Length: 145
Image 1 (tube, rainbow, N blue to C red):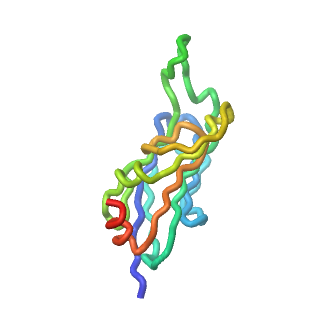
Image 2: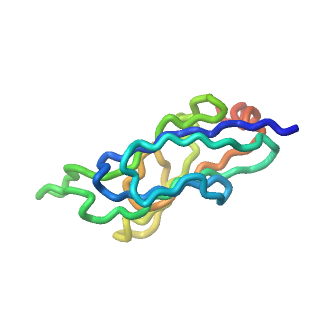
Image 3: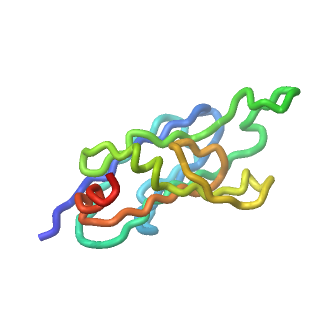
């Protein structure tokens, strides 16, 4: 019989008045979706710990140029971003692994060519953060810690 593990995380905005959208999927199945993150979101999701590959994605959408304030010198004064934190698998804090293994794909909200870079928990542009992991989860922990 397969055991279940719990995937948990929190997503918060730096500006809840900005209608930043968020879609979270596990293995291409949406587990959370909102067109406006207007309060911190805490998500707990159960998944089977069967042998296999998984992909967790966070997609931010809806960010507009007016959600960023830039001064006369070109410095960002304020910015509406989404912060992903408190990432846990089966009650184990994996924030460090999340920051080391995620890939953030975005195009600077259409102003530059698309890039892929590490994600340290902050999504400042419309785009997608991906974390690939395998189960059984404790074997994945051993391989990556």
